[in-house]
Length: 321
Ligand SMILES: [Zn+2]
Image 1 (cartoon, rainbow, N blue to C red):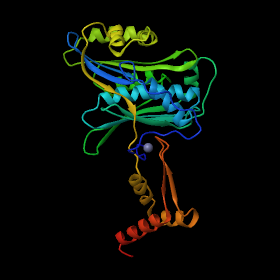
Image 2 (cartoon, rainbow, N blue to C red):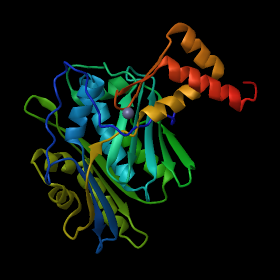
Image 3 (tube, rainbow, N blue to C red):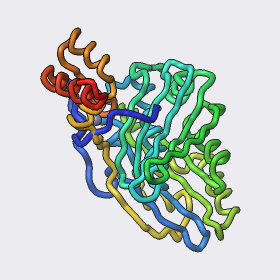
Image 4 (spheres, helix red, strand yellow):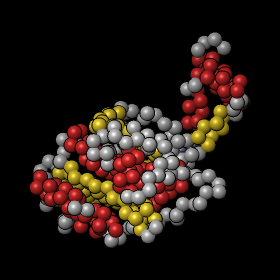
């Protein structure tokens, strides 16, 4: 399930829906900051995705519990994306037997994220964290698929056990990476907005790093240090200081945004993949192919004339035109 219709257009919302909150810029807008704490030998990544999470809720029509889980997944994807090299992408996939069904986030090192939830309309009233757990159910998998250059992908997965995205992502790091990692995800309500702010923080020990320092960060995160800092309105660097301590040196600070790479051309490629029989079937039944991008809801129409053209080219390729 890594193959999705990709794009070049900005996300769109259907007419008539309330529009997403205006994007905030400056240091409290959505961003990914990465850097080092040289005296402790730690790598640190902080991601803030609140604007993107609220925009995604409108884009995908997410009910509160689905929206919360997707917000956490966006933060997790942003952290994973920041660990990628070059232009390589990373996918976070969750499959579960609960009402959510699963979710998917695609991210890269440039601060681009996008994704979707299998079942958008999941809402459990009451405690949001307990509701999220209920939405995941009892069994499932968390997988990370990393592009490792030249169209090669590396997948590793863990079975869901914590039934909490941050907890299972920690287990994924423990099982898949050789590096001591501390991480947390925080969804902090503000007034009656359940997605008031959303952030993730990841700390890894560098080869010459201090193992005890990672343990201390873990203890602070377990005591809720990230959520507290974010709730207090901390900037990225303030939040890092609150969890990791002094000595952080910034290496990169990027704006994070929901961007999709889908296009009419990609829609045509997707239709070609139906093959001659598939296209003949569409021509007989609907006369045109309509494709909606799962990530950004953009709608592409491949009209009858183009379908006939695609069918003719496939026939030529097969040598029996
Ligand atoms: Zn798209």
